[in-house]
Image (cartoon, rainbow over all chains, first blue to last red; front, side, top):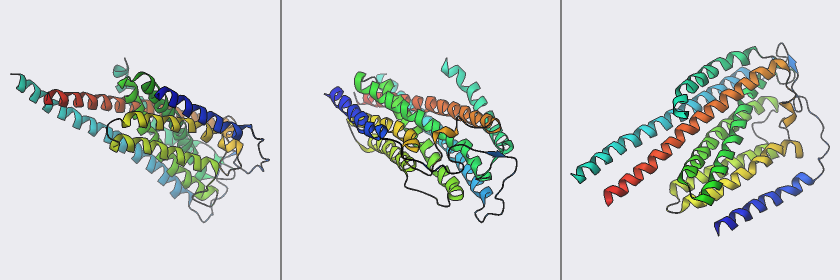
Length: 97
Length: 219
C-alpha cells in the first residue's frame, strides 16, 4: 500500500516537472554577474550608499553562529540523552536485583 | 572506521573554516558587484550542502518506507535537520547579497521561491516528527521524499525561468582566482555537513535506545 503511494508520489513529481523542463527556454537578457563573474583587482563601487562590508560581515558572522550554534545544540542534546540513559540503566539494573 | 576518523576530520574541517576567510579575502573582486559578491563563496557552498542533505534525507526516507529499517530513518532525520540548518544559511545570506547586488532583499522568482518551499517542506518534516504522534515517522518519510523531489526544480529553475539569480553556468566558468577559494569552501562545507550528519545520526540512535530502555523499565 505504502509502496504504491510512494510510486504514485514519485510519478506525480516526475510528470509534474516534465512540462516545465520540456518548454523552450525564454530568451534571456544577460545581466552583468548573472552568467559568469568577471574578476577585478579592486572593488569598483566603493562609494555606493549600501555598505557592502557590513552585509558581508553579517553574512559570515551569521554562518559561523548558525554552524557552531547547531553543533553545540547537537552535542548538548547528545549529552542529555546519554545522562538520561545512565539514569534509566541504573533503574533497570536496580529493579533486576 | 568512521568513528576513528571523526576527530581528525573535525580538526581538518575546523582548520579549513578558519583558513577560508583568508582565501576569500585574497580572491579577486567581481567587476559589477564588488565586495558583496564574496558572500557567494559560503552561500553557494551551503547551497550545495543543502541539496546533498535533502538527498540524504529523501533516500533515507525511501529506504525506511520500503524496508522499515530504523537506521535509514535515523539518517533521514539527521539529513532533514541538516537541510533546515543549511537552508537557513542560504536563505539569510542570499538576501544580504541581493540587497546590494539587486537593490532588494527578496524577489519572488523561481529560484528563491522554490528554495523557500523546499526549506518549508523539511521544516514540516521535523514538525511532523516532533508533534505527529505514533505513525508520524512514515508520513514524515513521504514528506521528505517530496522535499527531495524539489531539488532538481530548485537547481534548474535559474536556467529554465527568467530570474535575477545567477545561473548554474557561473560555477563552471569561474576564473582561476575565484575557483580555488570556492572549491575550498565547498569541501569545507561538505566535510562539516558529513560530520554533523554523523553526530546527529548518533543522537537519533541514542534516543531510540533510550526509548527501548524506558519500555524495558515499564515491562
